[in-house]
Image (cartoon, rainbow, N blue to C red; front, top):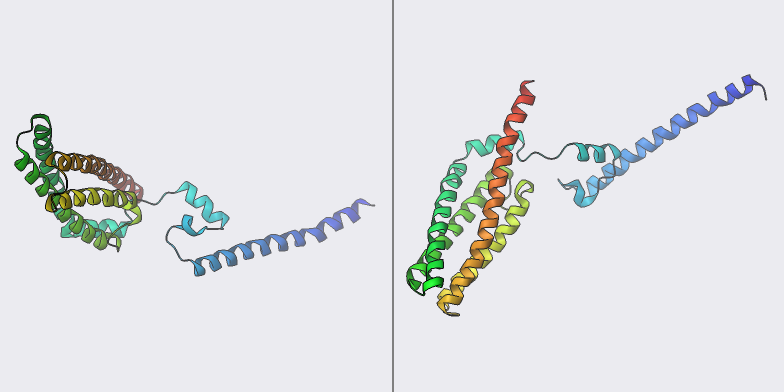
Length: 218
């Protein structure tokens, strides 16, 4: 076969390869659109995003803790201030209560004041849970389990369940005061972990803000 024939054959195959690539890209776009129409979800990992470009972008850029609009709503709402006040108040009540509970468990004295301290701490927890849900609705558009605070909210349910179990034990007189306060200690352990989760997210938000402001300015 002559070189001109080989060259001509290559020219004939080139449009076919181009057409094949174009059909593949078209299929990819149509299939992705179909998946989005069937299962629209803000987290593509839940439904599967079959777009190669989307997969690459997901691996290179993570979702920010706050989008620009969410950051504006967070800074504007009064519920941010409410949370900022209630969180340290609750932690102070926790610290005082923890000392009183440990004192009773160690000496057997002060059962009543230890019990009241846990009840006050539980009331503050209920308050911050309700106001926190309102804050989350204002900022993220949902009362619980917003993507940015999903696992914090999940663990908060465990904290709430253990505090509620303690409250039920006291009101229904289930168990001895020592057993009830041991349950309170278990609730306090989960509270400390949950508080650490939120402190970490607060740190992430502070670190993220200057970086994004610098990027915008650049």
